[in-house]
Length: 385
Ligand SMILES: Cc1cc2nc3c(=O)[nH]c(=O)nc-3n(C[C@H](O)[C@H](O)[C@H](O)COP(=O)(O)O)c2cc1C
Figure (cartoon, protein in one colour):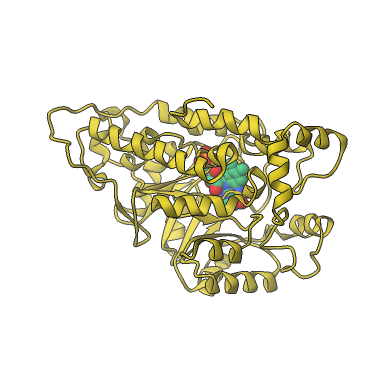
């Protein structure tokens, strides 16, 4: 077992332990991957200020996100198909988040259902919704979320049509996998994963199969899903869904100052600046590049979160200093899940927490709530300062 000191170690283990089609589904961007790469590379261009002699003995990373106490300003982003990375993956990730004191967001496209996660954790979590055309399903899924104690809805706006990921097409990725010869070989080479999957009954989309009208098997499901993403989505529809839900909504997938300004009028509780981890519009700016302009557009006090590209505590801190009130991580915890299940997600969160804590200290700050633009090198403060 290798010594695990950084998220990259978890990525390597994930790659070894999970069939290739599911690892590839995670570690990929749309088309040329330019936005996927920029999401990380642009963090590298921002410098933190090294400050000394500022008494950093007692430090605090705890704060609030959406009014909820969190042990650090970081949440797990909605990631589809976690239950294909590890048996009952959504439950494992939700439990790890709960143990670490950070929010977990369940994807619509999960293997474990809303009810499974509620039962397994006994605690509130966040639920991500795609804007779907099937109104009956939408009403019922919102109702199920309410009954399961979901405390916030994360409404994804940047996937009403899917960006192309070459690897998924070439691998003919489906969940559960089709029993073709290449897939059988792939699975046979990962016996630990295969045995785990045999032991769970959660191998299909738990929020959908048996809930959406007429969806009982994989064929129905693929057919239903391909018809569901609502390309007619506009701001009026966003407002309608926010009203339907009636509780706090985070609008996810905004990466432009004009959209951010418009979003303020919807009554949403927060915006998650995101380009879907570079999986949608290839050629869009990285979120860290867009963030300062978006912060300026929404004003200093509106809750703004950022995801896409965060795989270290330093990157999380750069986002916070550039105007985010907190960050979401997708791949960073998914690598942990694929590598070691719940323990791997816990390890990912421990790594990120330690990196944030020590880096904040080396910047001469002892409370995350004071980590602002002045912690960045003067030329790197964008328009947020
Ligand atoms: C494998 C994978 C599946 C995803 N599935 C969803 C999803 O079901 N719903 C959603 O809103 N976003 C989804 N996302 C996007 C994430 O919520 C998040 O925006 C992105 O992962 C952030 O970038 P990062 O992975 O670099 O942290 C997915 C991302 C990945 C990597």
